[in-house]
Image (tube, rainbow, N blue to C red; front, side, top):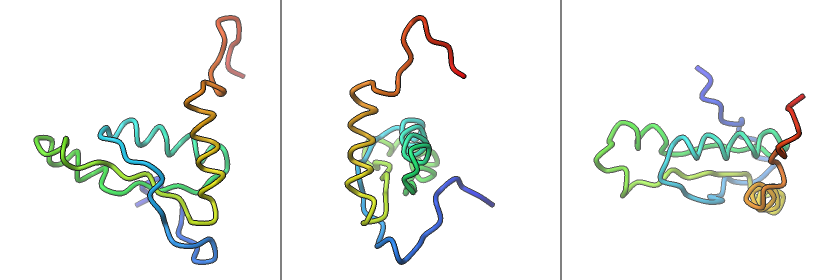
Length: 94
């Protein structure tokens, strides 16, 4: 079963936590942003948070990237947070 995480490649370095969020939906969105930008990404604990909803505030979802991709991943997330990937009112998606 494919969980949407990028495959592990030992040549790229160990997985490192880039950021943590408390919403699985936000985590999946951020993973998609990174993968769309060509950055391998994986989530850890997303299903655990969903299974134990009452504990969700204590269990963050970890967004992870390979060590060699960390600086690129940080740049992509910064661009996303600035709104660089947003559409203006007069634009339509292609």
